[in-house]
Amino acid sequence: MKVKREIFTNELDRKVFLGQVTEFFVTLLKVAILVGVSYVIISPIIGMIVSSIASTEDIYNPMMFILPENPSLEKYSLAALRLDYVKTMGRDLLYTITLTIIQLLVCSMVGYGFARFNFRFKNLLFACVVIMIVIPPHTIMLPLYMTFKNFDLFGLIPSINMMSTVKPVYIMTALGCGVRSGLYIYIFNQFFRGLPKEIEEAAFVDGAGVWYTYFRIMLVNAMPSVITVTVFSLVWQFNDVFYANLFLISEDVVISKKIGSLAAVIANQDKILNVKIQEQYVNAGIILILLPIVMIYLLLQKQFMEGAERSGIVG
Image (tube, rainbow, N blue to C red; front, side, top):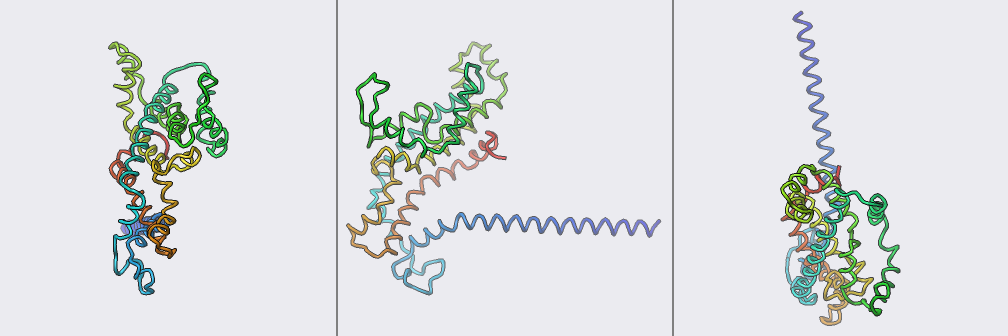
């Protein structure tokens, strides 16, 4: 019996050891995959940062590897000057934040309606929401352009040319068909469906109306999905150049459009004709444009991840 017990103990130890070794290699493989994927995603940004802080001497220095020997922020100062950074960024953030607020209100109300009310053609209308998510906006760019080129509201008002203004984007957003609005409606619908109906029933018993219940109770409980949609909307509205180009919105309002002409502006006004040095200024401009969105994401990262998990868009 003693010999059999020792054999069993040794066999158990061997299995435990093999399990630990297997777990170690699996963890090592996961870390290697994460590091590799992270490098592929982050390396372009690291390259832009290094290029933007490198001096002219570092560009032609064959001994420089990864970090520049003579770092300088001179590229950022000139890029900010040519972008008119403070004024243009202020206009862009005002434009982006107002669109985000409108999207939050409209998409949350539509999502709440789909989740809590029954009405005719509900399934058909929700199918249209799904189609909004699936169909790329490029397929409807011509009808959109023609609609706002000669906007007449079904003949009720004289034809108005809304090109070169931000009105088309605001109208589309207010009507629930702005940038990624279909996805936001879906997120709110999924979240409101997960909330217990007893919350609303208790409010109705206490005499609360539909609007009071929505704004003061349901929307407060839906704060994780609100944070998720806020981050998504801010990022996508801020980075959107498709509708900005389609509706000919000025680059003084959408700073992302200005980065495309930065190299030409520097070449004409500052007489910097070297393509490599122009690229440094463009990289500095891109980093300056990315800063506000990165800061917003870092501030809301925890709430964003919690909201994404609870909204049913991951996993």
